[in-house]
Image (cartoon, rainbow, N blue to C red; front, side, top):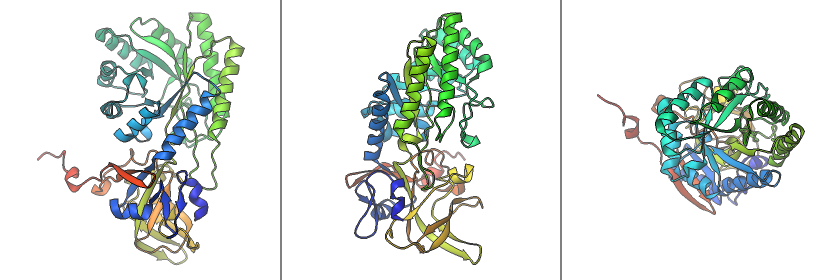
Length: 435
């Protein structure tokens, strides 16, 4: 199992008791103190990843803005950490916006995309001074124009285009192909751009695209950049449009399993920045400010889920189910679109593997399976299962299915753990009910 340590946060280790240690904290002790299911984030890994993205892109393309995509997971503690690291934030709802604002995050470093923003959300964005509103479609463009005229302010906007590129990832996490709910299709791009330019109450700063998530190839980014820069050059010639900002989204892959390595950040940075530099030189464009939006690749590996083993059901000749006290209510990605994960027995890291086991959740769905047929030591009730790669999307996609309580979250650093979200209580389940 120690070979799986590479999937956990940086500097994870095994102590003399054979326990998994993350951020200097014994995970078995964390489970005993805070209960399970428990999610933990390694602060060193988070800060190191911020620095790595800023360094790898900044040394190749100095005018780069690094954003964290709050949809991967956000709360006050993380918002403050990313503020300290000098990042911007990409939010997709007024709710996310309110969380980061409550943490004192500078609103001029907020970008606000989303395919169906309400009038109320756009009003809030104007009132709170959001740095960039990423306009997704013609309807929103006209709506924002009306609201900005009433508001009397002139918001900076980016126009999100759908370049029609296949990123070769799961169909549920493709966002920039032709058949997508996101962005203006290229066939309508000129109309959207000229409409925006004709609105004196809006300041069109540049263009945006996002092609998908968990993308491990560079060619889709390069194709999309070529398409968008070509469009920018054509619009400059025809309408005098100067693209001063280019937001290329994110979607960089992380390694979830031993057999699915992800490219280094430096390789993404090289492919993307060289494409922009070469494309601008070829087309006679001034290099725009580059913006990248990072969610999974920023926090995915920094987060770990801990569970306690309960019932073990061995069906001879079929499989052995190892049930844990969490599952699809806190970690829905495996059930939702077949995401693959790895795991270890955190209290027995030095034990030999004994066979293949299927880690099942406790919820009333046959599809509530976290990991099928993973090699582990022989599990016993009370073991602590640690699942790496759970920092992104597990927590924000969590539910109260079967009236379960949402998990506590801790931040670990240098042997100390601090609670950054308490576990829900039974009272929380009925807090909003009216009789």
